[in-house]
Length: 103
Image (tube, rainbow, N blue to C red; front, side):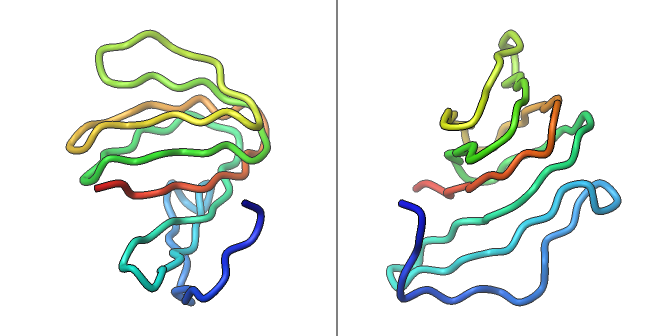
């Protein structure tokens, strides 16, 4: 899906790592939320509250889920991150992503 309809968008950006990772929250009528964002090259570590589905729209990166090996991810790939967990990213080139917060 390349477009969302009947949604609201939070005007203020989510800004992390001195502006190297940014996103906007998209809210759906059923109460679910996604973020659409961009990550610049660098190494990052994130923590999760909810289970997440990360869809990589463009870019090249490696991910390491807690206790797992590094895995290469490219445009068109996706991965899930468990709730109450953490993951590390090595962003190789500017990466466009969509993060869905799962129940």
